[in-house]
Each structure stands twice: as C-alpha cells, then as structure tokens.
Amino acid sequence: MRFTEKTRQVIRERAKNRCELCGTPVGMDAQIHHRKPRGMGGTKDDASRLACNGLFVHFRCHEKIERNREVALANGWLVRQSGDSQDQPVRLHYGWVLLNADGSVDFLASALDEKYQSPQQASDDPEDSTLPSALSTSE
Image 1 (cartoon, helix red, strand yellow):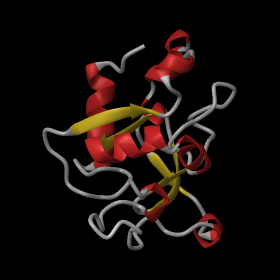
Image 2 (cartoon, one colour; image 1 turned 45 degrees about the vertical axis):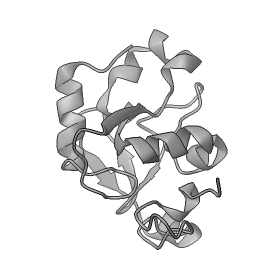
Image 3 (cartoon, one colour; image 1 turned 90 degrees about the vertical axis):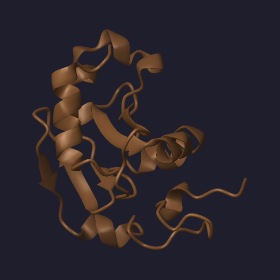
C-alpha cells in the first residue's frame, strides 16, 4: 500500500525536509522509503501505511539502502516482514529513535549510539561526506 498524502506530509514534517539518514536538506529528489518493503508483502499490511514505516530520504541515500540491505536491516532502515516498524529502533542522522505511528519520535538511550558509529560521523566515501559511513560503498 502507498502512503496517504496526509501520512506523507507527517513524515516530511517529522524530517523537517531533511534526509533522515544523512541530514542533508532535500527538495525535488526527496523520496519516502518504506522500512517494511512493499515488494516483500508490506502491501497486504495496513501498518505499512503508518508514518513509522516511512523514512524521508533523498535519492542517493535511498539507493544506498537498497544496495546494502544487511546494513539497512541492522540500522532499522529496513524491517523484516515478521517485524513491526513501530517497535524496531532506527538510526537517523541525529541518533537512535523509535518512530511512532502518529509521526512522533521517541529518543533512545545513548547505549545504542555507543554500540554503533554515529551517522553524523564522516563518511568513508571521500566524494560525499553527507552519507552515513555505513552506507558508503566503493563503486
């Protein structure tokens, strides 16, 4: 199922028109990424239309999520079909959070940030310092 226009607006407002992965302001290249992918059966689940299942990202970060699915799963950018987007922590550019169905965010303790490199730290890709290092790949 696609997000309703109202849910899309809630996700955009939550992100403050910035890519939720790298923090870069986004405009026309903004996309809403389904954490529980539609192609993996998410279309049959009404929960796939909730704001907690969407991430506001620019094209480049969206492409990196799709190319690095194991990294994306580990960071909550993707959620397995057996999982629940509302219960799965996600690493955004400002730290680990739980996304709620209404579009609000619950910040998590810094223990998760200590376990994983902060997404705000420099990218391994010298051509793009805006990407979280976990998304950088040599192409």
